[in-house]
Structures are given as structure tokens and as C-alpha cells.
Image (cartoon, rainbow, N blue to C red; front, side, top):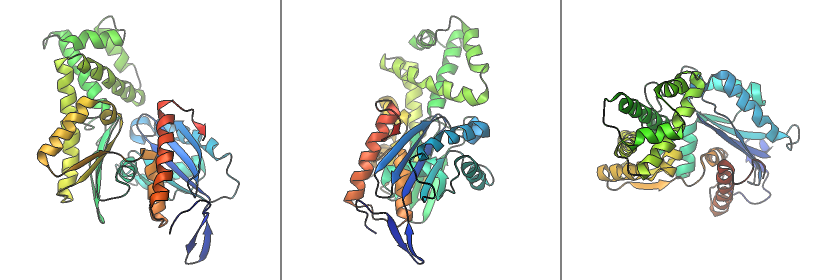
Length: 352
């Protein structure tokens, strides 16, 4: 079906079903972004919330942050039909995860979700606009996901205890580990030690230790991930250890992508990416791209076409058999640009 301004219904075998709103939630390990639109893609509201990784943050935190999103429906008339897509971290990573997360969503928001997918699937839809290819999310955690026709597979996403190589958390953890080694004298001191200690305002080693270990596990991951920004700053100053850490991160992220492309037999894969590690860190991104092209010269690498939360709209529109034509692409691009501004704080969240 073709979407035009004012479209508010779709045909079905049972007649006409009124579809008034589309709701998409891109949940993550550090933050969440949600958007609400009319069926013809007029943006109503964009809202931010906290993390929603049930394995890392816990059910209580997930429920609290889901509850915050209910304010977005204040302008939605009672009884309206809302098609929703939730991109949730940890989905597929433990038994009955989909039904478990659906239950929490229904209880906290009062919506029966149309789709509940892993957040990397939403990233893939935004990155490739639903085309065959591989998408990698490199933020607090790291995971790659790809599709070729009806085939799909993923790589990474093993969590902070045994995985997440190349992620902001991994970079931050490795940076702190190398700082500790330099404090101990187990390796030569570089600019990195004093730079990190100074930026975090630590006077001695035990202040660093206390800062890490005094936090509950659910809060420890995001604060360690935030250290990755300091690693980037140190690399810009030419610190060799920081550059090594970031180069290793780029290769690890590339390995996730290459594993998926190989398993799907994609000889000239379309590769898209999202997440702060690749978007904001040129050292990681350059090594990521270099390693992929060196291994698969025909790979096409691009930044995600849309913000990940818009991937939820792409998945919903495809499910409803709406053509992703020029009109739809322009609407999605406008929504994506607004979401980018909200995420960066250039525009306040709330009504669009």
C-alpha cells in the first residue's frame, strides 16, 4: 500500500482496520528514546528515558523507565489503536525472554506490542531500511545482526561479563585496567594515567578503586562506559596506549560484522553502523572500516540511514505492507533528524 498525507486506515481480510498511531521504542543499556507518530508519519512526541537492559539494569529499572513513557499518550484519544515496536536489549538472550519482556511492557504501558525485537534488529531496519545486509550497534554494548532473505543471524551481544568487545564499556574497562597497570608499575607510564586520574579527579589509587566497586552492578556499567570518552581524548593527544585500545576496539567490532556476513554468505555485504563508539570516535571507526575492507573488499560501509528508533517505524510499516517510497523516506528522514537533535539535547524531548 502507498502512504500519503492523511492516510489513517489499511485494508484487511475482515474489512477496514483503523490505524491511528505508530509507537517505537529504542531501548538501550544506557538510555532509551521513544517516538509517537500518526499513521501518516506526522510526529507527535519524542521522549527520553533511562536504560532498559533487564540483565544489566534489572527488572525494577526497566519497569520504572517504561512507566515514564506513558506520558507520551496524553494526546492519544482513549480507545485509539496504537501499533508499537519495542527494541529491547537482552531479548533472545535468556529463555522465554520475549514473553517475559512483553508482559512487563503490557503491565507498565498498557499496550499489547505489535513487535518486540532485540534492539539490534531495530538498528538493522534503520541502518539498511530493511535491505539484505549487516548492521552493528556499538554503544554501551556491541552486537551485529544481519539478514539475507529469510535467513538471519547475530554475533556478539554476550554482555559485559563475558563479551561486548569493542563497546564503550569494553574500552572504558580496558582503559582503567591499563591505568591500574601503570599505577602499579607493571607497564611504563604514559599520558593516559595522569590524564584519566585528573579528569576523574582522583588523588590516589584507592579513590579509583572505590569509585568502581562502591557502585551497584546496574550503575557500574554505564559509568565505566563513560570512560571511553576520556580514552578518545587521550588518543587525540597522541597517547599510544589509548590509540592501541581504540584500534583493538575497531577490529573487534569488525569481527562481529564479518562473522555475520560469512554465515549469511554475503559476498558484497551492505554494512551499516550506529552507536556512539563508531559515530563519535574516528580512531575506532577508521580501524573498523579498514579491517572490513581489507577482509571483504566489496563491502559497502555506511552510517545508518536513520536513527535507530526510526527502525521501529520501518519494521511496523513493512509489517503493515506499506511501500517505503520517496514520500515515506522523506517523512522518516525528518523524524530521524528530530530524534538526533533530541538525543543530543539540541531540542527538548516532549511534543514535536
